[in-house]
Image 1: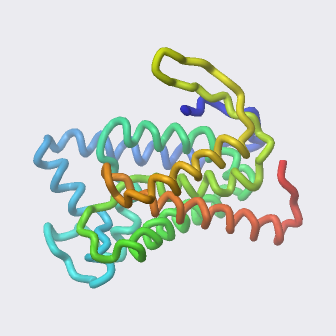
Image 2 (image 1 turned 180 degrees about the horizontal axis):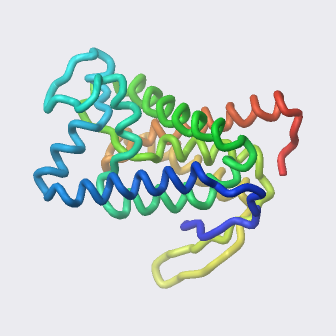
Length: 224
């Protein structure tokens, strides 16, 4: 299922969401300029590696920032065009509404918090892993978790692509995001197979939902 757009208009311009997309795109273009060997080195030096974070010991190549800060740098680095394309599509569709609800500054802190928490959740479950983690998907999972609670009745225009079948349908956000979260749980049974940190997706979604609950309790708001 590929989301195309939602039906919730934003009342403010999504400065932070667009800036995050631009920064991610700029970093990816920079990666491409490095050539094949340069990209691999750049990813290894900016990625969050569970065993390095747990032991605060660099296994090489040396990170470009102190190891704890790779939890931040890793959020802006992607492994390929499909990786960044999918992440930025989800951020574009769902991020503007959460930014609109939280406010620009709070949304930025929320996004970074969700990304770091998602990575830490993965690291706690796979502390000895030497597989580098990169990508914005943990932070974006946090955005999805918040959207799931704050806009459950939103309608998501969704492209369904199956063998011999392609169709555009409208799905409630409650179903679309609930199904997405279920897939992360099911896939987590194979851990990081296929190069995907499923645990980070789960952790990010839960943190995002928890932040949305805290926001509703503080603001006294109800789902839209």
